[in-house]
Image (cartoon, rainbow, N blue to C red; front, top):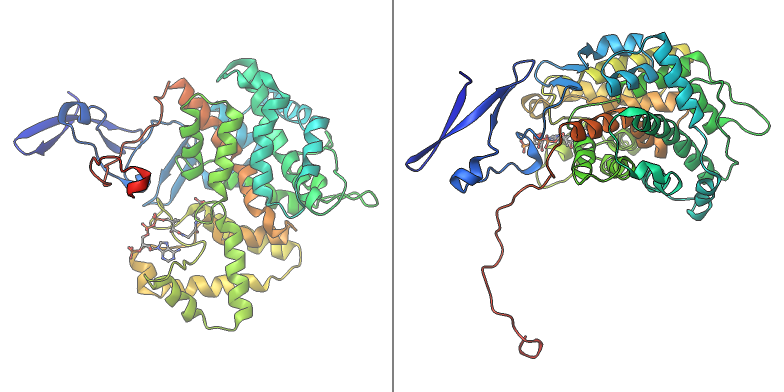
Length: 428
Ligand code: CMC
């Protein structure tokens, strides 16, 4: 017999179903509670609320475990390319040679933007935030490919849409940078790998073709792999909420980009660098920054620290930190911000506020230093996160449709005025 949970409210007891996940995660199913009892459950920020069953990514925040489709992140990060990981996340299995070739070819085939879509870039002010451009342009793609408005979650149409999105997100991102820099667009080169092609579109000039060193390509690849999915984070949940209305994939991921933009989520990678630069140039002691972060009257936070789920360490952060050392060494570079970051991490490890609250560096703490080393400008950091997260967003959108998930529509407890009579304008 399956396990039940019992909730007693007053003199009534309600039997609630208990479900258990693959890794023994336990859940009390409250779907019928309101109907049977009139009560809802309250969980602002959904810290303790499961919104779906998913077979894509597993995170154990207490043990610092992250697995894509069962594969540990440590192994995946070392051995797989971003395109392989995207395939794994989307289709559930690592691709064989033939599948990988076909997937790569399909991505290459869809890399160019419709000429009229390209023209839209000239309508943006040069100072436009690239995340705003990315979200707008992803939504706009459906105007140029009206067939994608048909919602498919499998079959050749879905496969085509996947390749189109994975490819065009990279082209749009690079073009937004070129537009802001007042430089001509570099069209995609089908002979280049996913990461090399992105770097070419970003950095080649009419007078000098950019040829990325293998160290840089590897580092970018690792960055994208580490960001490829992270179960029900803020932007992925956003994609699912939007998709639950059966909105098309393009609008759903465009909404995901907007959610990612905020500094508490993907925007943290750029915020970390701004914070480290401030610490370095202000001359103020580190203790002052720690005090500001601990002060409950102050909204200041140490960016790149803390995580809703990881309460021990973020495995992505450990991999990222190692990679930063490696890349700086291989490129014979020094980054003074790395010293500041290491010092800050050390200070927090000695500080009871951070230790008691389990606040450790998250994926965003060292990633900015990696992106700096490979020459990515600061305002593109969160865009890079978005490129990486695309497979996760698409896969979650697809799973939502496959599971025929209900429309997302949380409840609330109303705390406003009780019924009042309308007051005519003259009497107010
Ligand atoms: N600096 C100072 N105090 C913090 C921080 C921080 N970075 N993060 C959490 N706290 C405190 C928080 O104020 C709370 O204190 P108290 O118990 O006294 O009220 C305690 O730690 C527990 O935090 P929480 O409120 O349960 O944290 P949360 O799960 O609501 O928020 C977070 C998670 C990531 C938004 C938050 O840690 C944060 O704002 N970090 C800085 C921004 C950041 O690095 N974001 C990237 C997250 S990882 C990548 C991603 O998902 O995008």
